[in-house]
Length: 408
Image 1 (cartoon, rainbow, N blue to C red):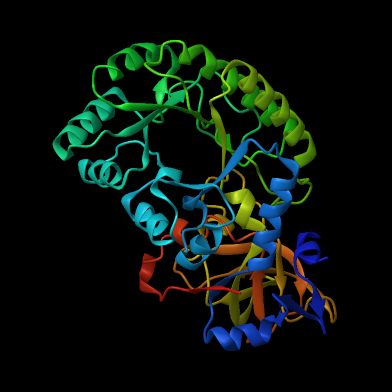
Image 2: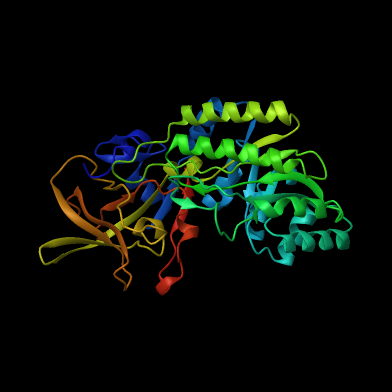
């Protein structure tokens, strides 16, 4: 099989060609007008959000983390589907506001926010997730200068971490948030700075496929926040416990057991409701909502043989899709699910390595993988590409043209 079974669940095949939103991949490529390109399927993303909402407790709000995929058309599509947006830059804030999301439902996180970003956030009325004591003081001064009261939450760096996370963002020494033991003093000072305390933000890690690890971290986040809230200048109205929901990329990985996560969230929500009923529980998700709904498509330019191995040289590469190349955090390189999109099932197979046109040995999209025997002009598809694709890649590297993005 040329890819994991993920593509068969997500996108149908007709006449040996992958179908995206009911459109044959070959026709879609003509419609886009060039390769490479990213394509995101509306129906898949909408269905993912709907399925998630059906499983989660009604009192849990779902926010979309724009960093996962900030394509404006996609963000605008997400606006009525979710309860809020989470942004991490002034650029993402503009995208969120342009999409029509109410400022009161937008939160702004990230270390090292510039004064210009803080001013924009305060002026817009969005919720600031404060990452340090210094940032709290700067936000207060900016609020005073603007004659506005900044809405603020504290991002907490807990002592615990999210076990089995592909990327850890809490526990131990981190650039994110305020160490838990320093938060009480920060809360006491917040009362004198004229900030509108809203609650806490805890984000322990990302890309996790272990339901038990996610549930444990969520339970600990709720317990820690309830303890810290005792020092707060006003009742805790919001608790963002991050996300961390992963999607399977590599052979042997299994999809997250959402039912088990939902059961754990029911327990956490009940604890919060019984102790702090005014607190809104927020789940912040990005990758889980959009990753599996997107593909990256590039075209074979040349078949090349070297020491008995087949290389398919394409017009795409790591400058467009750094994650698929393995250079976005992988310790040991693994292949994303890849296929020849116009030769999905029929015809002879071969072992091949898919590379891009860049002058670096790092430019590998798939290494020694079984694929349909491809010829120049055929379309290579990288699945699971709806998150952390184009904007997480060094687009300007070596001066090649950027890919297009389409929402279909």
